[in-house]
Image (cartoon, rainbow, N blue to C red; front, side, top):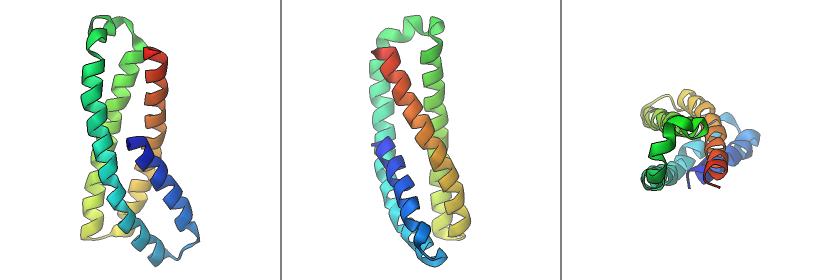
Length: 125
């Protein structure tokens, strides 16, 4: 769900490239409702991850890829929080500036999310 949100925002960003600046800002502000799906996906990632990693706690110190995956999840959570703060600020005032910040953070979340999935597949077979 979280990756789907990142992909959706990426494609909606492409769709707004032909719009005027005002239309693009309005459209992207309306599409922020998709972020709720990303938050649900993040919650599911954390809940399921805590359960699924239980057998791996004992080998954690000897598994650098698993440590990397966990660090990337923490970075992803941080980026999602920053995007949420930007969303609130965009609704209150300077939407265009905040949307640009969110776009940059969104690109990072997409890359990090794909890396987390790839590492999970590799580590957990």
